[in-house]
Structure formats: structure tokens, C-alpha cells
Amino acid sequence: MPCINADGNISRSAELILLTCHTAVTCEDLAREVKLPLFRIRSASRELTAAGLLEPVGDRFLTTDKGNQALEGSNKV
Amino acid sequence: MEDNLTVQPRLPRLGEPVPSFEAETTMGTVRLEDFAGSWLILFSHPADFTPVCTTEFIAFAGLQEELRQNGVELMGLSIDSVFSHLAWVKNIEDNFGVKIQFPVIADLDRKVAGLFGMIMPGESKTETSRCVFVIDPKGILRAMIYYPLTTGRNMQEILRLIKALQTSDAYGVATPANWQPGDKVLAPPPRTQEALEERLQAGFECTDWYFCKKNL
Image (cartoon, rainbow over all chains, first blue to last red; front, side, top):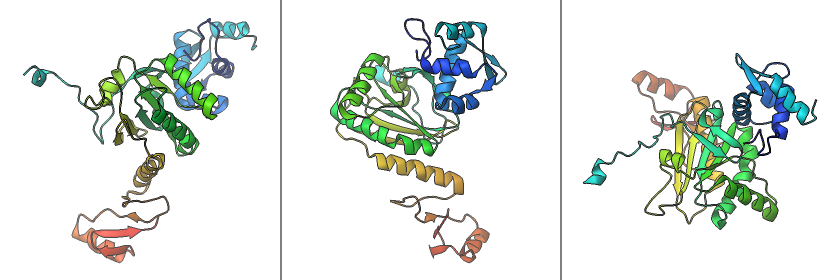
């Protein structure tokens, strides 16, 4: 699991994605913003959505309240 | 008799969509569809912590930046656990100073290897051979290379192959033997008399009506 570590904390790349998704962004924009290949963004956004930390809004993704709580837990907000 | 009745999965063929899959990798769960829009080199290796495979991983890593600049991603595969993969890529970094920055599929259940025909039982029933599948941005299989267990692949040939395919797609041409980027390309043979006559007047470098080269 690249986004959520075995101890339940979110990974550094997941933090970057959740921070960037405070406004709804596409996978392509996310890839440019966090400087990760598109395939990794697609994989990570799927995982974060399944965990309830992101929500799809059309072809964009937005950080959920649970996602913001996860960021607070990692002291990134 | 029983063998004849066993239904074998249909292996991918050139020019057809490759089978979809989802797999655990060193970079998380990845689906084939995640690479849509990019070229993908899906390659298998026999086993982690083996010398030829280590040289290949180092060579693939050395090629990755140039591949990425050409819109190509890499993904490896073997019948090893993700923990073995993680330990091996760390070992490569520690021993050779090379960071592996592409995902490696942990295909313990041989699901992906089976879909792509990566296991050659005549060589090994438990290891994948050195297969390379070049998949285009639309998920179409464009090229396959199979090497035996003993022989490391030539990365420059893989790079040349990708550039040749991309050139053919971009310009509607073919590439001759030993073609390298910048060399003349081959115009497709004319299929009508009209096209033949146009070809001869168009300033191509023609040895004969069917054999015309041109610069891009």
C-alpha cells in the first residue's frame, strides 16, 4: 500500500496528493503538481478514494473531511 | 488426450489489445489501465537476487529517464513476493548505487505471467523468462521480445525499437534493418499504379518502385 502505511499513517506521496486536492484537480494536474508519473497518481487516487480520503468529482478529485483529518494527524495542515 | 482438452489462455498477439490486469507492485496496486496514454514496457525477469537480472535492472534504470522523455514507462515482473522485490531493489541501491524507480509486479500467483505467456516450461516451470512486451498508449501490443534465462537483454535495442515504433506511428513509414533515429526511413510500397507514379515523381530516393527511402 503506497498511500497508507501498515501503521495506518499516510505516506509522503499521499500527503502531497491530499494537500493538492483541497481544490478539485484532475489526475493530470496532480501528476504535474506533485511530480509523480500519471500511473502512480491514478493508482494512488484509487486507493485514497477507497479509503475515503479522496472523493471523485467528475474527472477530478477532492480531499474529504476524513482526508483532512488524516493530514492533521500527520501534522501537514 | 487430456492435454489436448485443456483450455489454454489465449496469449497476446501483436496489434491486439493486451489483457487487463491488476497486480501488487513495489509501488502499490497497479492496473494496466493506469498506464493509458503512455507507452509501457512490461518486462519479466526470472528471479530477484540473481546476477543477470541485477545487471538488467541496473540497465533498465539507466534507460528510464530517456524512456520517460519519450513517453514510455517501465514495469518489471517476476514470481517473487513484494518483500523480496523490496529487499532486492534496496540491495541494488546499496551495492550498485542505482535507485530502481519503476514498479515491479509481485506475481506470486503467476496471474500476469500466465496471461502474457511469460513462463517457458522447457526452460523453467517456476521462473519467468526474459520477456519484453511493448504496449502502446491505447493498450495495443506492438512488439514482443523473448530472451532465455542465460542471456541479458540489450537495452539499446529496446530503446531503438520504441523509437522506431513511435516514428512509424508519427510519419506513416517503416524503418529498415539497423535503423537508428536520424537515419532515412522507408516509404510504404505503393498499392496502386497511381501511387506508384506519384512516388517516382515525388523526389524519394528510390532504388526501385517498391524500395524508396526518405529523410524525415
